[in-house]
Image (tube, rainbow, N blue to C red; front, side, top):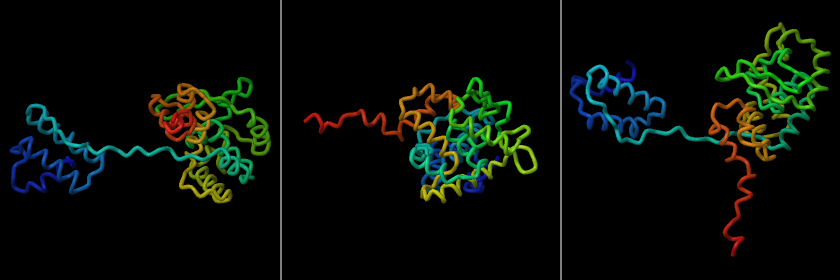
Amino acid sequence: MAELKHLLILLGTYSIDDLTPKRLKDYFLYCLKNEGLKERKMNGKINAIKFYFEQVLHRPKMFFDIPRPKKPQTLPKMLSKEEVKRLLEVTTNLKHSVALQLSYGMGLRVSEVVGLKLTDIDSKRMVVHISGAKGKKDRYVPLPQTLIAKLRKYYIQYRPKEFLLEGQYGGPYAIASVQHIFKNAMKKAQINKRIGVHGLRHSYATHLLEAGADMRFIQELLGHNSVLTTQVYTKVTPRSLSKVPSPLDSL
């Protein structure tokens, strides 16, 4: 297998079957320090070699006490409420405005925005059905009151047949088109942040948290399987931090 190729090349004529756990550990450390292998490749290499020795050669289970590289935890990139407002104000095209407001107003992934069908919108119950979401987990999200009038105006003007946002020749609107809309809006609004349209979803979650929404509630709205995924937003909102008094204040 590919994960073993690098090791076999280094070994040359030396048999891989003769390697001791210590020699293997030295090899892994070499890959880590000298080759600079990233988390996924390094873990795949370790697991492949363990499989070969334990399952193919039927050797005792091996445990390697080496620092497996961890994927750096980056905080979600987001916009402030003022920036979101500016972004929406400069987006004058009705269809483009609806696309961005769906993303921010309901915290949708861009794939969920273009996947919305007319039948998913329930204006009587004021909810939107998100189907076929990531992890094949359906959910309902609240329909923003401010979107009702715009959606009705949009429907009258564009007359979509199946998907809420449809392409020029029918079918769902392209994800790349929504990404392009967001990029242009950022430029018009003069917001100089390296952020994609997914940042509107991050902004939605962060702004809900800042407003005092319960973490479990936000988890359900975003469709996260674990609340641990949602908790990352506590690191980008000042709401919780503002309640922690500094020792200086108690002097």
